[in-house]
Length: 442
View (spheres, one colour):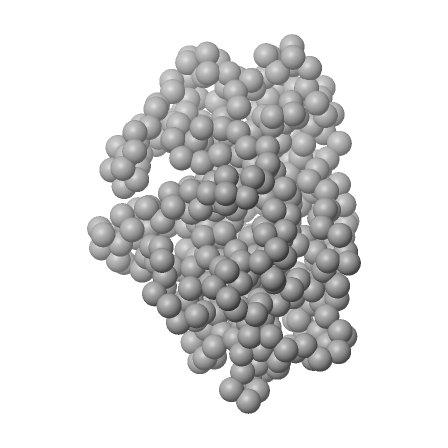
């Protein structure tokens, strides 16, 4: 595999202090692939996209084998902040409408809501307890200008999504349990927080129960067309498959398949979790169970979890190494203390990072791989993969069967993304914007 970040980024160190822990699925239920393996569908990646695709296919009666380099959820799926929320694109509504018309925009917004409900439906049907909380999500203004932007944005959001929002003035935040250095907020009714490890493991268990074979510690090293199907190679197995689904998102490589080269931009996000907060500390800081985020380049996202620990995350980081991790952790901690000065004394023993993916078109792609018949891919959820990555997987389950999807498949998801310039050095394209955001706080 040809990956564009350092080997360190794909190793165990960045997630060593992850609060969510490792998969609870027994290793003997996910043996490495060995020898000769034959399957109808090969799914590469056991995250939210891959597991949802595998489950959909297995429930339709197909033979499915999932190949995972580590264990289910090891990548971004079980190391994110646990926000099942609206999102998936960085495009403003006007740009989506310009590309696909007003109906295309409405279809996309309806898809965002449907993605949240898909996850909720899975948890309810299977009885998976994922420590859910929050009635929707609140956007917080980190500057007075940001609050003016939320006032302007409110009507646009309500029109596009078809729901009512609640604007919270600065002086009202404390009454909502939202103490901190913020200038107001806007609450949307859709979305909830969850434990992504419990959701990921719930998906893996559902797949196993449906007859899916999951091969852990089985990275796919190469994929080639072969006799009308595909020949895949792992360190210990040769795999024959009729069709292939690629679901590796930010942990993709440039050559598995080669079509992915430069079509994704891997970016880092860092998360910390505090020790359990005391009741008086909660009252002095953030006492709401609402999940929230700020509108800025180095986006901050945070929530008080049901167990009384506080999660705080921040985007940023262009390099991955022991030294850059220390710097990223320090920067995240500094931002946490600036946002919640009442908690400057509160320890944060959990601190980790992971990789998400952007696309050049600014939105996910879910569909067939051009010029590679029988191969399909879903990626680039722009930091909102809990809901949209799950939805993409279920879509792929239908598309790979040649079926009309049983859910919305908006034009925005169908657009084939182009390639970023600079090849393997393309992450440097982000440097000027990151530097500007660091200087201005925007």
